[in-house]
Image (cartoon, rainbow, N blue to C red; front, top):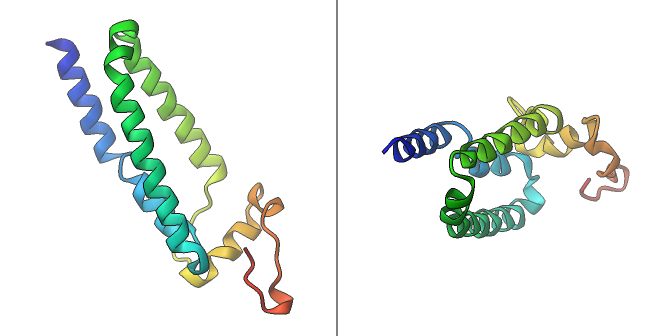
Length: 123
């Protein structure tokens, strides 16, 4: 009974915090030129990994016992560190200027080239 209660608490906490970010963040970070392609890749990857986790969860629960909660808590810590260091702030940034955010970011600017002088898309 305790394990079921802890699973329910974990799922509720995830659904109110990190869960929606997999849908929200990609809708904000893609420039208009590639937004539909980016969102389609995001949705397919989200559904694929949801399927993989759902298939593996019971076997992991049987083998890890309470360690399954530590396993997923570790992933939440990794996600938190990634978002803190690698995800740029998009608050009050118009969709048309999202490319500029990537070009100014300390890490991602080396992967994003600027071709604005010839009128081409920056990504």
